[in-house]
Length: 137
Image: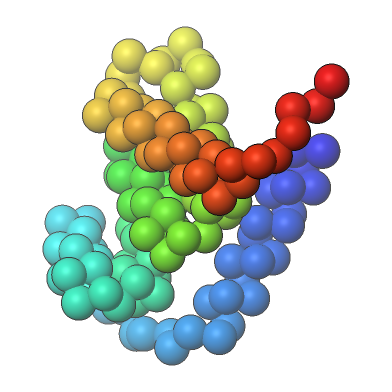
């Protein structure tokens, strides 16, 4: 079941990225520069551009878990800002899975806490959208 969700999320991401303008990201950019350009794009509400910078950060730094988690968090948060709550929830839960390992204490803890806060916010937003939903018995 989890594998099906992962395949669906990847397919959705590919489909969405195909609809967006693809930018040419220089291989010369450092991780700090990729993050800076992503933040600049976010400040201008250019979310698809920001995602592309974070995807580049993720792909180019597979051996650096801190940078991978940074990218994963920000991509999930962008989807949250875009009100893509189901996708965002999946991405935050995928990110939090990194913290269910023996190396948890080596990971940046602020992204764990922030992810939990946003997941709680998504739950609250969904409750507000369905105030009269019935509980399953």
